[in-house]
Image (cartoon, rainbow, N blue to C red; front, side, top):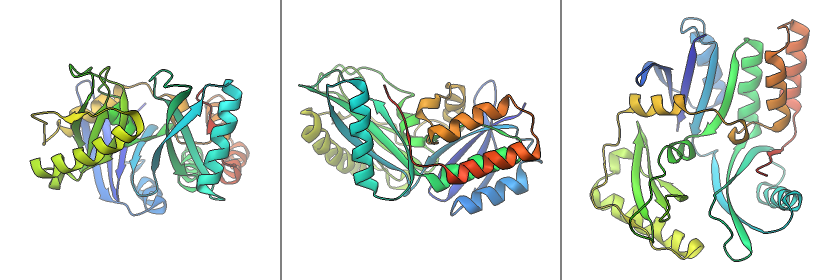
Length: 287
C-alpha cells in the first residue's frame, strides 16, 4: 500500500511519499482550485501508485477562529457552537471541527479553536477517492497540524511566540507557558526577515493579550529557514490521523469508513459519491 501525503498551500500542491526517515517529494505543481487538484490526481495517481492519502491544506478558503463556550453540559456546548457557525457562515455549507485548546476553565468558559473549510472542497475529494478505490485518511488544517508538532513549555509564564515553516507556508505560533497553542498567523517565508517577524509577532501578541490576558514575546533567535521540508512532512505523516480533526462532514467520514469494509461495486461507489455531493454541513463533536 503506497501512502501519500499531499500539501496544498495557496495554489501550490506537493505530493510526498513518507519514508522511514522523512519523506520524498514525488510531484509539485500549481493548483488553483479543487478541480485542478482532482485533474492532477487523475493524471498522476496510477503512475505514483497512490492507494492511501491524507491532505493538509491552507488557503483563503480555510478559516480559523476562537470560540469561548460557557461551562455547560457538553450537548448544550455543541448546540451553541453549531448555532454560532451557522450565524457566521450563513447558508454556505462548510465542514468544521472545534478543537479543545486544553487551557482549562477560564472563568466560567472554555476555549475552542475552530477550523472550517467549504464542503464543496472536502466532498469533491472524498467522491474522487471513492470512485478510484483510494483510502482517504482525512483533510486537515496545515497550520494547525504544524502547531501540533511542537508543544514545548516556555520558561516565561507569559508564554512564547515562535516561527515554523514548511516550504512556502510559514507561521508565527503563540503558546502559553505550558506550551498550549493560543493562535497563529501566516508569514510568507520569502518575507520572514527579522523585522517582518517582529512586526508579525507584535500583531499576534496584541491579539493574544486581548483574548487571554497574556503577553508572549518572539523567541530571541527564531529559525527563519525552518526545518527541512522532507523532515517536517515525515513528522506529519507519522502523526496518527485523528478523524475528529478531519475537515470532512461526519456523514461523509462514516461512509468512507464503511467503504473500506465493503466491496467496490459500481453501485455502492455511485451511492456513496452521490451522498458526498448531497451531505449537509455538520461538525465533528469535540466532546
